[in-house]
Image 1: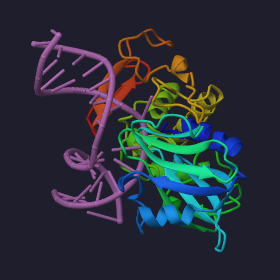
Image 2: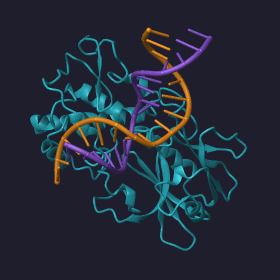
Image 3: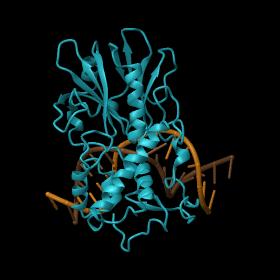
Image 4: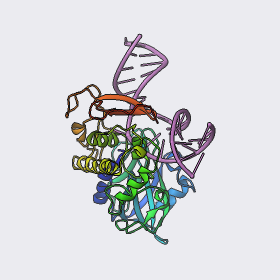
Length: 297
DNA sequence: ATGTGAACCTGTTCGC
DNA sequence: TGCGAACAGGTTCACA
């Protein structure tokens, strides 16, 4: 479940069902799931054994469990769900999923934590934590693989004015900047299209050509739409995007642009259009969000 | 340095 | 019905 609201739904599930428990053992299926773990899958599995889960934290689309190993400093089990990753809390007796890549058992013999990923763009890594210099909210620190990720709009340390300045300084299409996790994190293809629809700006407009207030408004809409989606349990089009209990969110009913090709814009009635952008799809209202002249990526 | 596009995977849906 | 093409919510890396 890829974008910020869906990842946050998963984080909350982990907080409820996993935090506080002691891992007994981890089993990894195949090496690919641990490819971001420098020391390899065997090392990862070994290091997870007997660690206690202290917390579940998140920045943008990155999720991590803060672990207390028996004789070491706290470490972060960083999880990225990629395009199709799932974390599921399930009884040990539940049949293994077709794309099951990792299983964590706990000393309390309660439900397992499973990592399932059809397209295997996601994965796990155990890494050190670095002190968080950007502000509060991440008391245990930030994992090394997350250091290059900018704060997301729902974090207290999100510096709206600084992000606006950075956006303004780029000679890049607005949507590309919204998707740049090093500028502002958590926004993916769905919420970028929704934020742009709400802000009534075309994603191919260059950030350098927009005013700072206009850029700020786009960021505000991005934060709003992600908060709204979170309130609905996220966006799920199918069983691939579910919470730790396998349940779908229902924000898909509230989408105004994404996936609405041909449907009338709820604001003006013009047919929502789809176009190719950065090797993927953009959806927008051609009347409310007039396209700039030249095509830019 | 900065901006752009393709690659990494598997599964499902679309069009002829 | 069959089969290839297009498409899917993300990130990274090579190249201009």
